[in-house]
Length: 309
Length: 152
Image (cartoon, rainbow over all chains, first blue to last red; front, side, top):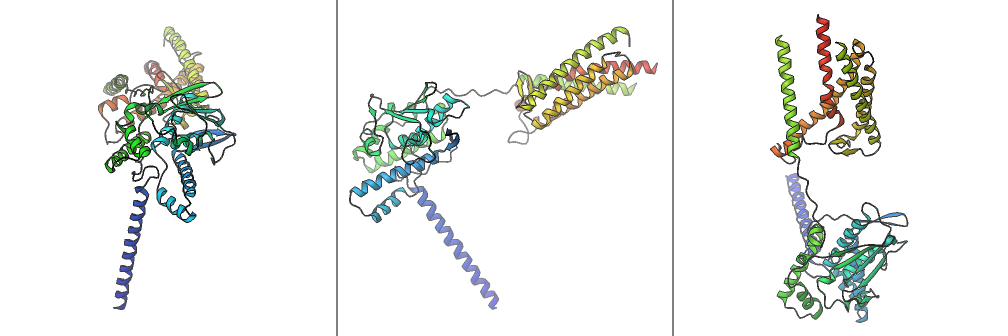
Protein backbone atom coordinates (compact mmCIF):
# COMPACT_ATOMS: atom_id res chain seq x y z
CA UNK A 1 0.00 0.00 0.00
CA UNK A 2 2.73 2.42 1.08
CA UNK A 3 4.67 1.65 -2.10
CA UNK A 4 1.67 2.51 -4.26
CA UNK A 5 1.15 5.76 -2.31
CA UNK A 6 4.84 6.66 -2.79
CA UNK A 7 4.59 5.96 -6.50
CA UNK A 8 1.53 8.20 -6.80
CA UNK A 9 3.25 10.98 -4.87
CA UNK A 10 6.36 10.84 -7.07
CA UNK A 11 4.14 10.79 -10.18
CA UNK A 12 2.35 13.95 -9.04
CA UNK A 13 5.70 15.62 -8.33
CA UNK A 14 6.98 14.79 -11.82
CA UNK A 15 3.75 16.16 -13.35
CA UNK A 16 4.12 19.39 -11.35
CA UNK A 17 7.74 19.74 -12.47
CA UNK A 18 6.72 19.30 -16.12
CA UNK A 19 3.96 21.92 -15.79
CA UNK A 20 6.33 24.41 -14.10
CA UNK A 21 9.03 23.91 -16.71
CA UNK A 22 6.45 24.34 -19.50
CA UNK A 23 5.15 27.56 -17.94
CA UNK A 24 8.68 28.94 -17.52
CA UNK A 25 9.51 28.10 -21.15
CA UNK A 26 6.30 29.76 -22.33
CA UNK A 27 7.06 32.89 -20.32
CA UNK A 28 10.63 33.00 -21.66
CA UNK A 29 9.51 32.53 -25.27
CA UNK A 30 6.98 35.37 -25.05
CA UNK A 31 9.61 37.61 -23.47
CA UNK A 32 11.97 36.90 -26.35
CA UNK A 33 9.50 37.59 -29.16
CA UNK A 34 7.62 40.50 -27.70
CA UNK A 35 10.11 43.34 -27.89
CA UNK A 36 12.53 44.91 -30.33
CA UNK A 37 14.62 47.72 -28.93
CA UNK A 38 14.16 50.03 -31.89
CA UNK A 39 10.50 49.30 -32.56
CA UNK A 40 8.72 48.39 -29.33
CA UNK A 41 6.23 45.57 -29.76
CA UNK A 42 7.63 44.43 -33.11
CA UNK A 43 7.43 40.71 -33.81
CA UNK A 44 10.59 38.66 -34.20
CA UNK A 45 11.75 38.30 -37.82
CA UNK A 46 10.59 35.20 -39.72
CA UNK A 47 12.93 32.31 -40.50
CA UNK A 48 15.45 33.43 -43.09
CA UNK A 49 18.70 32.35 -44.68
CA UNK A 50 21.28 35.03 -45.48
CA UNK A 51 24.84 34.16 -46.40
CA UNK A 52 27.53 35.92 -44.38
CA UNK A 53 29.83 38.61 -45.76
CA UNK A 54 33.31 37.09 -45.95
CA UNK A 55 36.29 39.45 -45.93
CA UNK A 56 40.03 39.25 -45.29
CA UNK A 57 41.56 41.27 -42.50
CA UNK A 58 45.33 41.07 -42.18
CA UNK A 59 45.29 37.76 -44.07
CA UNK A 60 42.69 36.20 -41.77
CA UNK A 61 39.22 35.34 -43.05
CA UNK A 62 36.42 37.11 -41.18
CA UNK A 63 32.79 36.01 -41.53
CA UNK A 64 30.19 38.67 -40.77
CA UNK A 65 26.61 37.49 -40.32
CA UNK A 66 23.47 39.63 -40.07
CA UNK A 67 23.25 38.44 -36.44
CA UNK A 68 26.73 39.87 -35.73
CA UNK A 69 25.62 43.17 -37.23
CA UNK A 70 22.40 43.10 -35.18
CA UNK A 71 24.26 42.42 -31.95
CA UNK A 72 26.72 45.23 -32.66
CA UNK A 73 23.85 47.62 -33.44
CA UNK A 74 22.17 46.61 -30.17
CA UNK A 75 25.35 47.18 -28.16
CA UNK A 76 25.93 50.63 -29.68
CA UNK A 77 22.31 51.67 -29.13
CA UNK A 78 22.37 50.41 -25.53
CA UNK A 79 25.50 52.44 -24.91
CA UNK A 80 23.91 55.53 -26.45
CA UNK A 81 20.84 55.01 -24.25
CA UNK A 82 23.07 54.60 -21.18
CA UNK A 83 24.86 57.89 -21.87
CA UNK A 84 21.56 59.68 -22.45
CA UNK A 85 20.13 58.36 -19.18
CA UNK A 86 23.30 59.31 -17.31
CA UNK A 87 22.81 62.87 -18.45
CA UNK A 88 19.30 62.70 -16.98
CA UNK A 89 20.93 61.94 -13.59
CA UNK A 90 19.61 58.39 -13.37
CA UNK A 91 21.42 55.98 -11.08
CA UNK A 92 23.35 53.03 -12.52
CA UNK A 93 20.75 50.66 -11.09
CA UNK A 94 17.91 52.56 -12.77
CA UNK A 95 19.83 52.69 -16.05
CA UNK A 96 20.48 48.93 -15.97
CA UNK A 97 16.79 48.26 -15.34
CA UNK A 98 15.65 50.53 -18.17
CA UNK A 99 18.14 49.08 -20.64
CA UNK A 100 17.36 45.52 -19.61
CA UNK A 101 13.64 46.18 -20.12
CA UNK A 102 14.00 48.05 -23.38
CA UNK A 103 16.51 45.73 -25.03
CA UNK A 104 15.18 42.38 -23.74
CA UNK A 105 14.93 39.99 -26.66
CA UNK A 106 16.00 42.63 -29.18
CA UNK A 107 17.82 41.20 -32.20
CA UNK A 108 19.12 44.52 -33.53
CA UNK A 109 18.00 43.39 -36.96
CA UNK A 110 15.94 46.34 -38.17
CA UNK A 111 15.03 47.58 -41.69
CA UNK A 112 18.10 49.84 -41.82
CA UNK A 113 20.69 47.31 -40.65
CA UNK A 114 19.24 44.54 -42.82
CA UNK A 115 19.05 46.83 -45.88
CA UNK A 116 22.67 47.96 -45.45
CA UNK A 117 23.78 44.34 -44.96
CA UNK A 118 22.00 43.20 -48.14
CA UNK A 119 23.38 46.17 -50.09
CA UNK A 120 26.93 45.38 -48.91
CA UNK A 121 26.48 41.69 -49.71
CA UNK A 122 25.26 42.48 -53.23
CA UNK A 123 27.88 45.16 -53.91
CA UNK A 124 30.75 42.94 -52.74
CA UNK A 125 29.60 40.02 -54.90
CA UNK A 126 29.21 42.33 -57.92
CA UNK A 127 32.66 43.94 -57.53
CA UNK A 128 34.74 41.02 -56.27
CA UNK A 129 32.84 38.03 -57.70
CA UNK A 130 34.27 34.85 -56.19
CA UNK A 131 37.27 36.69 -54.70
CA UNK A 132 37.35 37.50 -50.99
CA UNK A 133 37.91 41.25 -50.52
CA UNK A 134 40.47 42.73 -48.16
CA UNK A 135 38.70 44.86 -45.57
CA UNK A 136 41.03 47.77 -46.40
CA UNK A 137 39.97 47.57 -50.06
CA UNK A 138 36.27 48.19 -49.27
CA UNK A 139 34.69 51.62 -49.28
CA UNK A 140 31.02 52.44 -48.74
CA UNK A 141 29.23 55.68 -49.45
CA UNK A 142 25.99 55.71 -47.51
CA UNK A 143 23.03 58.01 -48.13
CA UNK A 144 21.20 56.69 -45.11
CA UNK A 145 21.87 58.60 -41.87
CA UNK A 146 20.36 56.05 -39.49
CA UNK A 147 22.23 54.24 -36.71
CA UNK A 148 21.16 50.82 -38.05
CA UNK A 149 22.61 51.30 -41.55
CA UNK A 150 25.64 53.26 -40.35
CA UNK A 151 26.63 50.81 -37.63
CA UNK A 152 26.20 47.88 -40.02
CA UNK A 153 28.65 49.45 -42.48
CA UNK A 154 30.98 50.51 -39.64
CA UNK A 155 31.04 46.89 -38.47
CA UNK A 156 31.91 45.62 -41.95
CA UNK A 157 34.62 48.24 -42.57
CA UNK A 158 35.90 47.99 -39.00
CA UNK A 159 35.58 51.76 -38.60
CA UNK A 160 33.09 51.68 -35.72
CA UNK A 161 34.08 51.71 -32.04
CA UNK A 162 34.58 48.29 -30.48
CA UNK A 163 34.46 46.20 -33.69
CA UNK A 164 36.32 42.93 -32.98
CA UNK A 165 39.19 41.44 -35.07
CA UNK A 166 40.18 44.65 -36.88
CA UNK A 167 43.78 45.03 -38.05
CA UNK A 168 43.14 47.02 -41.22
CA UNK A 169 40.16 49.29 -41.76
CA UNK A 170 38.00 49.95 -44.77
CA UNK A 171 36.33 53.27 -45.40
CA UNK A 172 32.85 54.63 -44.75
CA UNK A 173 31.69 57.98 -46.04
CA UNK A 174 28.25 59.48 -45.57
CA UNK A 175 27.06 61.80 -48.28
CA UNK A 176 23.35 62.59 -48.10
CA UNK A 177 21.26 62.85 -51.29
CA UNK A 178 21.44 66.67 -51.13
CA UNK A 179 25.26 66.48 -51.17
CA UNK A 180 25.80 67.15 -47.45
CA UNK A 181 28.75 65.19 -46.10
CA UNK A 182 28.31 63.95 -42.56
CA UNK A 183 31.66 63.52 -40.83
CA UNK A 184 30.46 62.70 -37.32
CA UNK A 185 28.77 59.30 -37.48
CA UNK A 186 27.80 59.10 -33.81
CA UNK A 187 24.14 58.37 -32.99
CA UNK A 188 23.71 61.85 -31.52
CA UNK A 189 24.98 63.49 -34.70
CA UNK A 190 22.93 61.21 -37.00
CA UNK A 191 19.67 62.10 -35.21
CA UNK A 192 19.92 65.58 -36.75
CA UNK A 193 19.82 64.18 -40.30
CA UNK A 194 17.10 61.58 -39.72
CA UNK A 195 14.19 64.04 -39.74
CA UNK A 196 13.16 64.05 -43.39
CA UNK A 197 13.98 60.88 -45.22
CA UNK A 198 12.63 59.41 -48.43
CA UNK A 199 13.48 56.73 -51.01
CA UNK A 200 16.69 58.55 -52.04
CA UNK A 201 18.10 57.75 -48.59
CA UNK A 202 17.80 54.00 -49.28
CA UNK A 203 20.92 54.16 -51.41
CA UNK A 204 24.49 52.93 -51.02
CA UNK A 205 27.60 52.97 -53.21
CA UNK A 206 30.11 50.16 -52.81
CA UNK A 207 33.63 50.87 -54.10
CA UNK A 208 36.59 48.57 -54.77
CA UNK A 209 39.38 50.97 -53.86
CA UNK A 210 42.18 49.10 -55.63
CA UNK A 211 40.46 49.26 -59.02
CA UNK A 212 38.17 52.24 -58.54
CA UNK A 213 35.14 50.16 -59.61
CA UNK A 214 31.82 51.26 -58.13
CA UNK A 215 28.42 49.64 -57.70
CA UNK A 216 25.36 51.62 -56.68
CA UNK A 217 22.54 49.93 -54.79
CA UNK A 218 19.15 51.63 -54.83
CA UNK A 219 16.14 50.14 -53.05
CA UNK A 220 13.05 49.69 -55.25
CA UNK A 221 10.02 51.83 -54.58
CA UNK A 222 7.68 48.87 -54.03
CA UNK A 223 9.76 47.59 -51.10
CA UNK A 224 8.70 50.57 -48.97
CA UNK A 225 4.94 50.60 -48.16
CA UNK A 226 2.87 53.64 -49.09
CA UNK A 227 2.85 56.32 -46.37
CA UNK A 228 5.89 54.78 -44.62
CA UNK A 229 7.95 57.99 -44.61
CA UNK A 230 5.11 60.17 -43.28
CA UNK A 231 4.23 57.65 -40.58
CA UNK A 232 7.88 57.29 -39.59
CA UNK A 233 8.18 61.03 -39.13
CA UNK A 234 5.06 61.13 -36.98
CA UNK A 235 6.10 58.14 -34.85
CA UNK A 236 9.86 58.57 -34.57
CA UNK A 237 10.50 62.32 -34.98
CA UNK A 238 7.46 64.43 -34.16
CA UNK A 239 6.01 61.88 -31.68
CA UNK A 240 2.49 62.98 -32.61
CA UNK A 241 1.20 59.62 -33.87
CA UNK A 242 -2.01 58.12 -32.50
CA UNK A 243 -1.88 54.55 -31.09
CA UNK A 244 -3.48 53.32 -34.36
CA UNK A 245 -0.80 55.05 -36.40
CA UNK A 246 1.91 53.55 -34.19
CA UNK A 247 0.41 50.10 -34.75
CA UNK A 248 0.25 50.71 -38.51
CA UNK A 249 3.85 51.89 -38.58
CA UNK A 250 4.94 48.83 -36.60
CA UNK A 251 3.33 46.55 -39.21
CA UNK A 252 5.05 48.47 -42.05
CA UNK A 253 8.37 48.46 -40.17
CA UNK A 254 8.14 44.67 -39.81
CA UNK A 255 7.21 44.26 -43.50
CA UNK A 256 10.26 46.28 -44.67
CA UNK A 257 12.62 44.41 -42.33
CA UNK A 258 11.20 41.03 -43.37
CA UNK A 259 11.52 41.95 -47.06
CA UNK A 260 15.26 42.65 -46.64
CA UNK A 261 15.70 39.38 -44.76
CA UNK A 262 13.76 37.10 -47.06
CA UNK A 263 13.38 38.52 -50.58
CA UNK A 264 15.89 38.04 -53.43
CA UNK A 265 18.07 40.93 -54.66
CA UNK A 266 16.10 41.51 -57.86
CA UNK A 267 12.94 42.18 -55.87
CA UNK A 268 14.69 44.61 -53.51
CA UNK A 269 17.13 46.61 -55.60
CA UNK A 270 16.99 48.52 -58.88
CA UNK A 271 18.97 47.19 -61.85
CA UNK A 272 19.38 43.63 -60.58
CA UNK A 273 18.09 41.11 -63.11
CA UNK A 274 16.39 37.93 -62.09
CA UNK A 275 18.56 34.96 -63.16
CA UNK A 276 16.90 32.93 -65.89
CA UNK A 277 15.83 29.49 -64.86
CA UNK A 278 17.29 26.77 -67.04
CA UNK A 279 14.56 24.94 -68.91
CA UNK A 280 15.03 21.17 -68.82
CA UNK A 281 16.17 19.84 -72.21
CA UNK A 282 13.21 17.57 -72.87
CA UNK A 283 13.85 17.35 -76.64
CA UNK A 284 17.49 16.29 -76.21
CA UNK A 285 16.44 13.74 -73.61
CA UNK A 286 13.63 12.43 -75.81
CA UNK A 287 16.03 11.96 -78.76
CA UNK A 288 18.51 10.04 -76.63
CA UNK A 289 15.76 7.97 -75.03
CA UNK A 290 14.34 7.08 -78.48
CA UNK A 291 17.79 6.01 -79.73
CA UNK A 292 18.21 3.92 -76.58
CA UNK A 293 14.84 2.19 -77.01
CA UNK A 294 15.45 1.55 -80.75
CA UNK A 295 18.94 0.21 -80.02
CA UNK A 296 17.70 -2.12 -77.30
CA UNK A 297 14.84 -3.25 -79.55
CA UNK A 298 17.25 -4.08 -82.37
CA UNK A 299 19.48 -5.98 -79.96
CA UNK A 300 16.50 -8.00 -78.77
CA UNK A 301 15.36 -8.80 -82.33
CA UNK A 302 18.88 -9.81 -83.36
CA UNK A 303 19.32 -12.09 -80.36
CA UNK A 304 15.91 -13.75 -80.94
CA UNK A 305 16.71 -14.26 -84.65
CA UNK A 306 20.13 -15.66 -83.72
CA UNK A 307 18.56 -18.17 -81.35
CA UNK A 308 15.91 -19.15 -83.94
CA UNK A 309 18.65 -20.08 -86.43
CA UNK B 1 37.84 -11.12 -93.79
CA UNK B 2 38.94 -9.76 -97.15
CA UNK B 3 41.69 -7.21 -97.70
CA UNK B 4 39.27 -4.26 -98.02
CA UNK B 5 37.57 -5.12 -94.74
CA UNK B 6 40.93 -5.48 -93.01
CA UNK B 7 42.09 -2.10 -94.36
CA UNK B 8 38.87 -0.45 -93.25
CA UNK B 9 39.18 -2.03 -89.77
CA UNK B 10 42.76 -0.84 -89.45
CA UNK B 11 41.94 2.78 -90.30
CA UNK B 12 38.69 2.79 -88.33
CA UNK B 13 40.13 1.41 -85.11
CA UNK B 14 43.27 3.53 -85.41
CA UNK B 15 41.08 6.65 -85.48
CA UNK B 16 38.78 5.34 -82.73
CA UNK B 17 41.82 4.41 -80.61
CA UNK B 18 43.31 7.87 -81.02
CA UNK B 19 40.01 9.49 -80.06
CA UNK B 20 39.66 7.20 -77.00
CA UNK B 21 43.24 8.01 -76.00
CA UNK B 22 42.58 11.75 -76.34
CA UNK B 23 39.38 11.49 -74.29
CA UNK B 24 41.24 9.46 -71.65
CA UNK B 25 44.09 11.97 -71.42
CA UNK B 26 41.59 14.83 -71.15
CA UNK B 27 39.69 13.03 -68.39
CA UNK B 28 42.91 12.27 -66.54
CA UNK B 29 43.90 15.95 -66.61
CA UNK B 30 40.32 16.92 -65.67
CA UNK B 31 40.28 14.52 -62.73
CA UNK B 32 43.18 16.44 -61.18
CA UNK B 33 40.88 19.45 -60.95
CA UNK B 34 37.12 19.68 -60.91
CA UNK B 35 36.61 18.19 -64.38
CA UNK B 36 35.04 20.04 -67.29
CA UNK B 37 31.84 20.23 -69.30
CA UNK B 38 32.21 21.27 -72.93
CA UNK B 39 28.98 21.52 -74.84
CA UNK B 40 27.37 18.09 -74.75
CA UNK B 41 30.56 16.43 -73.50
CA UNK B 42 30.73 15.93 -69.75
CA UNK B 43 33.95 15.12 -67.95
CA UNK B 44 33.01 16.85 -64.74
CA UNK B 45 32.58 13.65 -62.72
CA UNK B 46 29.58 15.42 -61.21
CA UNK B 47 27.70 12.17 -60.57
CA UNK B 48 30.67 10.31 -59.15
CA UNK B 49 33.97 12.23 -58.84
CA UNK B 50 35.78 9.18 -57.41
CA UNK B 51 35.10 7.29 -60.63
CA UNK B 52 36.51 10.01 -62.93
CA UNK B 53 40.21 8.97 -62.70
CA UNK B 54 39.20 5.31 -63.18
CA UNK B 55 37.22 6.24 -66.26
CA UNK B 56 40.28 8.06 -67.57
CA UNK B 57 42.49 5.01 -67.02
CA UNK B 58 39.92 2.76 -68.74
CA UNK B 59 39.70 5.12 -71.74
CA UNK B 60 43.48 5.29 -72.06
CA UNK B 61 43.60 1.47 -71.94
CA UNK B 62 40.88 1.31 -74.61
CA UNK B 63 42.96 3.64 -76.77
CA UNK B 64 46.05 1.42 -76.39
CA UNK B 65 44.05 -1.78 -77.08
CA UNK B 66 42.59 -0.34 -80.28
CA UNK B 67 45.89 1.12 -81.50
CA UNK B 68 47.83 -2.06 -80.77
CA UNK B 69 45.22 -4.13 -82.67
CA UNK B 70 45.66 -2.18 -85.92
CA UNK B 71 48.78 -3.99 -87.20
CA UNK B 72 47.77 -7.27 -88.90
CA UNK B 73 44.14 -6.61 -87.91
CA UNK B 74 42.71 -9.81 -89.46
CA UNK B 75 44.80 -12.02 -87.17
CA UNK B 76 42.62 -13.48 -84.38
CA UNK B 77 44.81 -12.27 -81.47
CA UNK B 78 44.89 -8.74 -82.86
CA UNK B 79 41.14 -8.77 -83.36
CA UNK B 80 40.73 -9.94 -79.75
CA UNK B 81 42.48 -6.74 -78.58
CA UNK B 82 39.94 -4.61 -80.43
CA UNK B 83 37.10 -6.72 -78.96
CA UNK B 84 38.62 -6.18 -75.49
CA UNK B 85 38.70 -2.40 -76.00
CA UNK B 86 35.08 -2.41 -77.17
CA UNK B 87 33.92 -4.49 -74.18
CA UNK B 88 35.58 -1.99 -71.82
CA UNK B 89 33.63 0.83 -73.47
CA UNK B 90 30.38 -1.17 -73.26
CA UNK B 91 30.85 -1.76 -69.53
CA UNK B 92 31.49 1.89 -68.66
CA UNK B 93 28.88 3.29 -71.06
CA UNK B 94 26.41 0.63 -69.92
CA UNK B 95 26.91 1.76 -66.33
CA UNK B 96 26.36 5.39 -67.34
CA UNK B 97 23.17 4.51 -69.24
CA UNK B 98 21.92 2.34 -66.40
CA UNK B 99 22.48 5.13 -63.87
CA UNK B 100 20.43 7.43 -66.12
CA UNK B 101 17.62 4.88 -66.40
CA UNK B 102 17.61 4.34 -62.63
CA UNK B 103 17.75 8.07 -61.94
CA UNK B 104 14.99 8.94 -64.37
CA UNK B 105 12.22 6.96 -62.66
CA UNK B 106 11.86 8.50 -59.16
CA UNK B 107 10.83 12.16 -58.82
CA UNK B 108 12.63 14.69 -56.63
CA UNK B 109 9.86 14.82 -54.05
CA UNK B 110 7.49 12.18 -55.37
CA UNK B 111 7.68 8.44 -55.94
CA UNK B 112 7.62 8.77 -59.73
CA UNK B 113 9.03 11.42 -62.04
CA UNK B 114 6.87 13.51 -64.36
CA UNK B 115 7.09 12.74 -68.11
CA UNK B 116 9.02 15.99 -68.64
CA UNK B 117 11.43 15.18 -65.81
CA UNK B 118 11.80 11.60 -67.04
CA UNK B 119 12.78 12.69 -70.58
CA UNK B 120 14.95 15.57 -69.32
CA UNK B 121 17.06 13.14 -67.29
CA UNK B 122 18.29 11.62 -70.59
CA UNK B 123 19.36 15.03 -71.91
CA UNK B 124 23.00 15.94 -72.63
CA UNK B 125 25.77 16.29 -71.55
CA UNK B 126 27.08 12.73 -71.84
CA UNK B 127 30.33 11.14 -70.72
CA UNK B 128 32.93 10.29 -73.45
CA UNK B 129 32.21 6.54 -73.24
CA UNK B 130 28.61 7.15 -74.30
CA UNK B 131 29.87 8.94 -77.43
CA UNK B 132 32.25 6.07 -78.19
CA UNK B 133 29.61 3.38 -77.59
CA UNK B 134 27.89 3.42 -81.04
CA UNK B 135 31.26 3.56 -82.84
CA UNK B 136 32.59 0.63 -80.81
CA UNK B 137 29.69 -1.55 -82.03
CA UNK B 138 31.42 -1.88 -85.44
CA UNK B 139 33.51 -4.63 -83.84
CA UNK B 140 30.34 -6.82 -83.78
CA UNK B 141 30.52 -6.99 -87.60
CA UNK B 142 34.10 -8.31 -87.42
CA UNK B 143 33.16 -10.80 -84.67
CA UNK B 144 30.29 -12.18 -86.77
CA UNK B 145 32.55 -12.25 -89.83
CA UNK B 146 35.21 -14.16 -87.91
CA UNK B 147 32.57 -16.52 -86.49
CA UNK B 148 31.23 -17.21 -89.99
CA UNK B 149 34.70 -17.94 -91.35
CA UNK B 150 35.52 -20.28 -88.46
CA UNK B 151 32.27 -22.21 -88.97
CA UNK B 152 33.10 -22.71 -92.66
